[in-house]
Structure formats: C-alpha cells, structure tokens
Amino acid sequence: MDVRQHSPVVVTLRLCLYALFTGLLALTAARAHGPATVAAALGTGAVFAFGALSPAVHRSRSASAVWLAALGVSWLVLLVFSPDALWAAFPLYFLQLHLLPVRWSLPAVAATAAAAIAGFLGHGERLNPGVFIGPLLGAAVAVATVLGYEALYRESERRRELIEELVAARKELADAERTAGTLAERERLAREIHDTLAQGLSSIQLLLRAAQRALPADSPAGAHIEQARATAQDNLAEARRFVHALTPPDLERGSLAGALERLCAGTAGPPAVRFSVSGTPAELPTPYEVALLRIAQSAVGNTLRHARAGRAEVTLSFMDTAVALDVVDDGVGFVPDAVPATVGGRGVADGGFGLPAMRSRARALGGTFAVESAPGQGTAVAVTLPYPGSGSGA
Image (cartoon, rainbow, N blue to C red; front, top):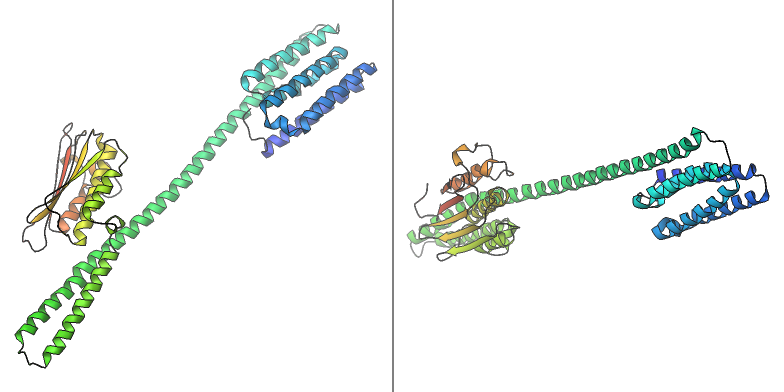
C-alpha cells in the first residue's frame, strides 16, 4: 500500500504485526509433535526475520514480492506438518496487503485463506463452520482494516495539501496586499508632491522671473531675486526627482507606451491582447501615466477574468489636446447600468479596480471615462485625459 513507511503509526503497527507472527510461530513450534514441525517453524521464522530486517524489502516492490513468496512457501511447508500453522495466516494477510499493490495483494490474501482452509482439512481435522469462517473472516477484517487505513491516509494527505496551499495562498495574499499598499502610497506621495510642492515651486519660479524682469537692471534686489529663483529651480528639480522615484515600477523602466506593451505581452490569455500607439507620443506628467497604466491594468484584468473574449486590443492615442486610452474586446459583454457602484468591472468584484475606481482616476485629472457594452456585443472602455493647460476636460 502507498503509505509512509516511516510514520510512527505504520512503524508501531509493523512491530505489532512482527510480534504477532513471531508469537504464532512459537506457539506452533511449542505444540509440535516432532522435530520436522519445529524445523519447519524455525525455517519460516528465519525467512520472516530476513525480510523484516532487510531494508530492500521495504524499499522495493519486487524485493517485497520475492520475500513474501518465499515466506508463503515456508509457511505452506509448516502447514503440511502442523494444522496450528493455520493461525499464522492472519498476520500474513496484513503483510501481503501492506507490501503489495492492491491488484496483487487481494488475490494473495484469497489464496492464503484457501490454503489455510485446505491445509487444516488435509490433516483430517473435524469439519465444522469455524474451519471456513475463521480464515475468511480474518481475511475480510484484514482487507477492511488496511484499505480503510489507506483511505484515511489519503484523506489526511489531501487535507494536509489543502492546508499547505491555504497557508501559501494566505502568504501570497498578504504579500500582494503589502505590495499594493506600498504602490498605492508611492502613487499618493508622488501625486501630492506633484500637485502641491512641485506646482508651488514652479509658480514661485515664474513669479520671481516676472519680478526680475520688472526690476531695473541696476537694482540691488536683482541678485537676491536671481538667487531665490535659482534656489526654487533647484528645489523644483529635486521635487521632480522625488516624483520620478515614487512612480510605479512598470513606469520606471521606460515610457507609458512601453509599460502598456509589456502589460499586453505578459498577459496569460486567452485572449491574446494586442497593443498599438496612435499619433506622436508626447511626454506626460507622472500622475497621467500612473492613472492610464492602472486603468489599463484593471480593464485588461477584467477582460481576462470575465469577458471570455476571442481577442482584445489596447490603444494609446496621442491627440492635439488630449491623450486617450481604449481597451476593446469581443467578449460576452454586460449591461453597464446594471453594475452596482460598489462592485468592480463586469459586475463582479475585482480587487478594488473596477469601473468606479477607473472613473474616479479619470475624473481626478479632469478627464472623461466611458464604457460601451451590451450582452453578446463585447466591451469598450475609453478614457480621455486633456493635456495640462489645454483648457479642455470633463
């Protein structure tokens, strides 16, 4: 049977089985009526001891089969000399069930029971129901015990694997939540620095430049204003470096277009997600790149999880006054108005980056967010963000 050979339960049961077989052989030898029976009992005991002490018997199926065959032959010889050897059949059942595969062990148990009954009758003993019931009932008990233990062991192993998977999943979830929290905080800090400190320093620099132009050329305040403007410019550059350092890792390795291309290439479809760029790429503020990347990740994730689409495409379009992101698939579609406000994209929870979250990101930057979908008609997600200072927006 497929059990752990060195588990405490199996080792204990094996020792008890060995002790039972040894005790029954000793009882047979003690009740012997001649030296031949004692010699047969000692021979059977020697074969048994060899297999019990041999590591090869417990490691190899073929070695176990050879040993059991030799033990069976020696036991049959003993059964020829003494009907008391009948009782040694019971531990033999367990050895056969323990060491042999089911397709071999069950026939071996049946043959051992038949041999025990035949051997007992061969000695001219009185025929009674116990002659048949004893060996057959012992065989049934042995089979039920071993197969039941094997079933319990398999169930225990399944539970252990499930627990290990659950522990691993919880660890992965905790790591993912920790990473998501870290990235969210990085994005928040980058956005706050850009929207407050960087913008304030930029305004200070512009005001100082205007004041510098308004001063006479020989004004003693000009040097101080120039020094203040240079300091503001240096601090603005430092603030921008902070913002760049706090951007998501996907954007640290290149442009937004490159991050979107890696996102589409790294999806484990189906469907395969294509990426294309329309227009002349322009440099975007970090909050714009972060928002568009997160919206694309959420929309593509929804497509892979829920759309059952045959194809999907992500398009980044640079226009005169705005940048647009479109995620289109030919999947099962849904009714946008039927999606609850607290539920993620496509009507199910998706970890917090659903339609409301995408819409909130777009509106926070003065952009527009639209979803076009219908059952069986696929889905199109469109985001448009106006360039800073373009004067357009939602």
